[in-house]
Length: 101
Image: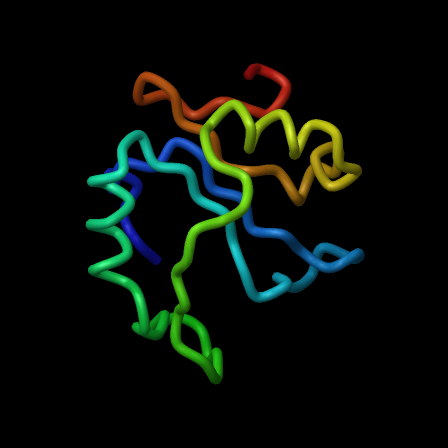
């Protein structure tokens, strides 16, 4: 729904056990605080146009911070090994798989 050039290098949308639906939240990591704040200012309390979600986006800080911490955390979870639950990882303008990082 939003462009890839917003400065995030990690995007993970957790899904239910069958992988058919999201759990209603996502994790993004930005290269800088400024990029994160720009994203928050643009999307906080907005609704995604392609989804019928009853609530607007609520953007807040996660407990886990940083690219490496997010990648390492997901590598140690079962979801990180499920093909349809893979995060979007971008480094140097190139999309990488979790195994490549």
